[in-house]
Image (cartoon, rainbow, N blue to C red; front, side):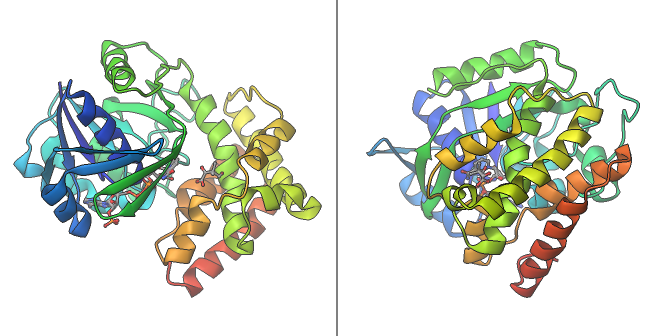
Length: 326
Ligand SMILES: NC(=O)C1=CN([C@@H]2O[C@H](COP(=O)(O)OP(=O)(O)OC[C@H]3O[C@@H](n4cnc5c(N)ncnc54)[C@H](OP(=O)(O)O)[C@@H]3O)[C@@H](O)[C@H]2O)C=CC1
Ligand SMILES: CC(C)(CO)C(=O)C(=O)O
């Protein structure tokens, strides 16, 4: 099984390191810059549960060096995907499956969704439908990423917590390709349940990201602090209720209450969301996949999002001032 992880940063690097340690798949990564140089020099290093491992993995700067794959794991930040389409193309053959390991509303959301909006492109994450055309939604295996992972230094991945990568076909089918991939991830020591309704799980994760991430960027606060403060907790809750109305109108089942989801986020503790971490590092923020796309889905389904709109306006303004959003 030929597997390439494109964008082997924190999440992609973790998946690649785990698959590499098992050695059961023909594994490659595409990376760039100092990170790529370090992986070529010293292997892909992973610190997990206090133990460091290093895996020699085929690491390419250009996908042409690797050719057509059985699976391509896309572990880029959502905004990095459109600019990378030409670089990803050489990995794709007629039977290549593409696994989207990203937070937020995925660009393929309305593929085989069984809704009246079937085939709708979401401009916030797929401007002009260029990703839909460039990758093809029929290749997609959806994913929900739970682990917290960081790139501590070039070539060095630090696992913080969590091992679950839920997978699911957009159609909900338990296809051979998704079952085979899940089996490899499990062999590598990860949890990989195959879902028949991956969109509902995407929404439960998104629920936290669309509210806590921009609030944390705006306030500089950790999850525990946002949840512990009555006013910011209420703000997150209002955003989540606006989002739930949109999700439910799209057929999403929320298996937990909004208050339980908020408690779960608070229990993570004094943790800075990825959006706050990106802001502090001056890196582009994933505003569009996490927040703008939800606003767009609100417009598509006829739901107003007054609180999401305000928070979105503020976090965009902040990110523009800091050069982290264009
Ligand atoms: N990290 C985490 O704990 C979690 C992350 N997620 C989600 O997972 C997704 C990935 O996040 P994360 O792993 O943190 O992000 P990272 O920024 O750590 O990793 C993305 C990697 O892709 C690389 N990249 C971007 N464009 C290209 C390109 N054209 N060619 C080669 N490499 C490229 C980046 O390189 P460069 O650094 O040079 O830009 C970086 O190494 C996001 O959607 C995030 O929200 C979800 C749950 C938890
Ligand atoms: C920690 C959490 C769950 C915040 O919603 C997250 O996914 C992130 O930081 O992006």
